[in-house]
Length: 328
Image 1 (cartoon, one colour):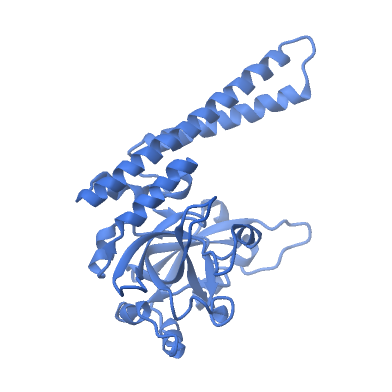
Image 2 (tube, one colour):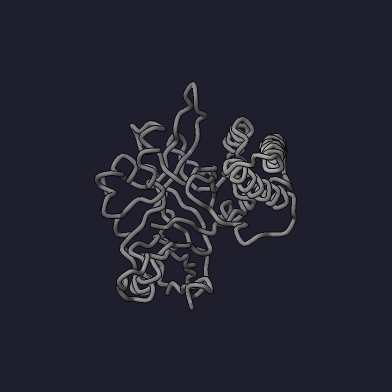
């Protein structure tokens, strides 16, 4: 599975592909983030940043909603710091008493760690520096997706959550089976049959990331007593180029307890040799630019043509890089 990707958040690139920014959908998504206070967790900074320089009234409206969501998310962190500070003070008082306890010792450790983590998050969101995860998209987070509006045929850029909620599923179903951020190509005619041939999308990415077992990366078996050590690998196409990743999407209608939102899954295939040699068994599908138009306008009566597009990805070699610890 592709568990993370570095996506292109510049909407102008999607606009060059014929997409129009759906400012209503973005404003709605930002309003939902204000209600939940999870802006920093669910919307990558690279996706928020373009709205800091709005080009029109619609984007200004999104920016206003985003600032409200920013304040709500900041308040959540500040409240966490206050709660854990109170916990720390109480624990230190018990530890300084004639009868210190193991619970107080544990509370002090946990509170200290949580305060440090919360302050680090606060510093990160307030900093103008770009961190390593600046453009990273993780399951459960939102990313811009280029889709074709089934009603009008127009191409739209919408904010979609990277985990598709399948037709007929509830939130509880999704929590039980959280792996629908990827759609296996060999399951398109079964699990994904209500979306394949109907709701096709594209996201633009620079590279993608996978978590593999160290021993598989080193092309060997585990030795007796050795534990399985996961390592992260970053794959970049050579020659370097923008990757137009094939996706399926669905709009989830609002309920009494949940806002309406777009969701999507990246389609994956069997890996090319270099990805398999690095220890992973799946790979995203980067469409050839000349096939994007056909992909975005599928005909459910001619699915073989869509499969042919997926079987003919870009001609690239996926170079991988590892953390230093994996190279020891």
